[in-house]
Image (cartoon, rainbow, N blue to C red):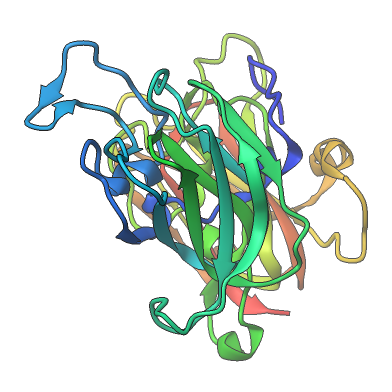
Length: 337
């Protein structure tokens, strides 16, 4: 990906979807103790913040999950329902701002169940006991090939975790989808951002999230372009499919919406390896899917079948915005190939 600041995170954290994102629908379903800071904060999409002078009835306000100090045996546990069934590629156990109150170690298990876990649920260890440090991101790769619905975070013995990220790929149920129309650009269906020209503002991954944007920071926005050309972003679809219609939402972008947009697409099925760099170069020459289309402020722009060119099955789409600006949500409706 191209941006002003190099992204030094592991591949799984840069390329895969956070299945534990509250913004995608993940939720904490149980916790042994969250006396100091409620467990739901641990799943927030934005980075953890610190307010030096903020306190509540139980003590210092912290942005994350924090249990009380244990005075006996045992340890604390939080169970999280993932936003969607998926294969897990890695974790980020983030202790940002927890300095004298972080857990010294953690381990993570996963389960797959139709409802919520109970006493009979079988758990599989994905991350063995691993050390944690103060106020830092702790990235752990996961090589397990299973498909999971829940994770269970153990912290030993107690303390605070600012954010838990569970990176992976949603498992699209092709049999359930059948020939019905679905959003091939939805993160919940496995779509992901491959690359972009710029993402100076906002949270670009939220462009593929469900619902409409929550504010101007909840989407993809580029800096003001001061040179010729235009900005672009490339989406790998959740599955190879035939796109029939599209939607571009500029919610909350009023003085900074793009003047217009266009789309290109390609079928890269069968190609293997890390192709992100090659994809960026080749995308300039992909076939046109949607011609240049006028956009307006703070509005949903529906692009009907008459404006979508029949390219057949595709796996990747490049959204071009002219010359720059913000897009809150992108929808690419179609059927599985």
